Length: 148
Image 1 (cartoon, rainbow, N blue to C red):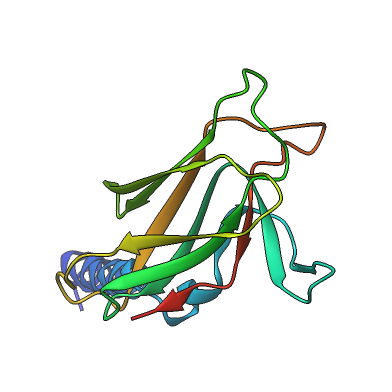
Image 2: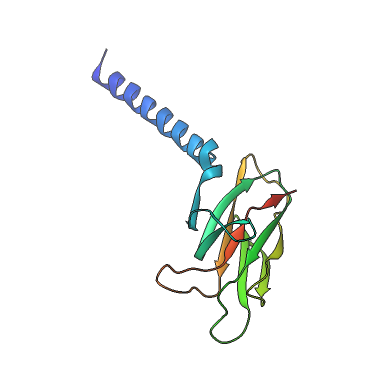
């Protein structure tokens, strides 16, 4: 085997391997469990499971879902007395904005996810909060989503 043929073979193997890894990482099966900007699950006095967000949090939902209902609560009021504004985006596309006034009650944010596009199994949901509080940068509390 000539040296040129060996280089061609190695190059072909590398290209195939990189393409395979990139294809797998585009929509890996474990991405459903990936979150960022969210603390561990806790349970409030009424038994509701929730997680604190930071100023920007994200998680993944199945792409077949067209709508998400998310329990959400702003425990700490805004410093200016106005509502705490929470913005939702799906795959970098703004889809909903919620203003939370009552800091003691859970609200139900209905977030349209849109239609499934492409062949991906999951879509990323971003949650951006207008203010954070304290050393841990606590944003809002979010419960378990209901998907439709």
